[in-house]
Image 1 (tube, helix red, strand yellow):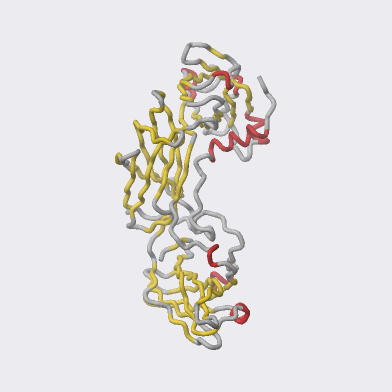
Image 2 (cartoon, helix red, strand yellow; image 1 turned 60 degrees about the horizontal axis):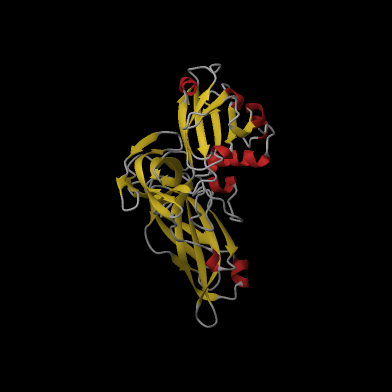
Amino acid sequence: MKTILLTSIIISLSGASMANENLTSKSDRSNAYTGISQPATPTFPDSERELKSVSYSFPISDINQLDFSQKQAHVQSRQYQLDVSGAQLKSGVPLNFSAKGALVRISAFDGKSAVEPEQLSVKTSTGKLYKHGKAFDTLVSSDVMQKNGMGFQQGTTGFKLDDSLGAGTFTLKADNVIASHAKYRVNVFEKNSDTEMHLTANKSNYLKGQALKVDAKVFNLGRAEKIVAIKGKLVSPSGKAHKVSFSPSKEGYVLNKPLDMTADSIPGALWELHTEVKAKVGGQLVQRNGQLPFAFAQKTASISAKPVVSGQKQSPVATIPVNAKVDGRYEVRAILYGTTEDGSLKPVMMTHSAANLAAGEGAIMMKFDPKILAQSGTTAPYKVEQLELRDQNQMALID
């Protein structure tokens, strides 16, 4: 039995918590508004954002690199988790493994009541008992996990089940030395499994009143498997939970939830759909958990009319009419197109402009960089396209 910490095992144990966070990028230019990183996107200095109207432009070298479509949000998972007490661990907790070599992480809720791998025994479905961590070919103590475990909280341990034990239902049991009242989260990551849960939303940004539509399916080697149980909840950035109900679909289950709750007040923070499923694969029960993040905001303003471009020949400026429901700081983003010698329109620059607006009808003035304009080789007439409106107080796309 190996007792040396392997970097690959630590990374894999980290993957047990991150395996369901493979969020498909919605846009190549997405940023904090959707929770996805974006390279080389300009931001406004805080002082300017808060005190006055600003505009910032950058040239466009390839319009095809910018994606304005509403992409699906998607996660897939080969992991599941259980919340158990110390008393349950001492009595024995059943764990289902659909493949050999599962990675297991146990975290103490209080951060100190760690269950060390040597305190654990494993019983197979045939009744064979492995005591004192002898079922593990790699184990990681709480001290080592804390020092090298990529940010794991205190009281976390982990182990890899020996490949020779294969798949099946096992009973994990702890020695009597742990406290019965202690609370633990057991996370199982089946890195070798062919069975994955997939959660797919129709888009990644929602406004209050819109419906969150999510397909939940379990695939094994590309074939949809029967889900025998499913439950879920919406969790706000502040941790408040809202129960949701799934309905059967052709190959799994579907959620169609009107988002009628109040959007959380934490700017830029994402909501999550937490989903737990149980599926039958080859007669064996397989469990999976997944967390699908999405942006959710209040519709605080809208673009009320087409933008008007003035000063066409010398210094074009676009006036963007905005109807604000509440006082706030709003931002518009758009691409300025200029006319080439053959009369076609060419994308010149992406411009971001922000201003404080009072509730009611107002406008944001979008000023364009004259140097970029001069280097573009285009002339009037100019046109503004791909217009977006964002609420900077919510850090959300709203129109």
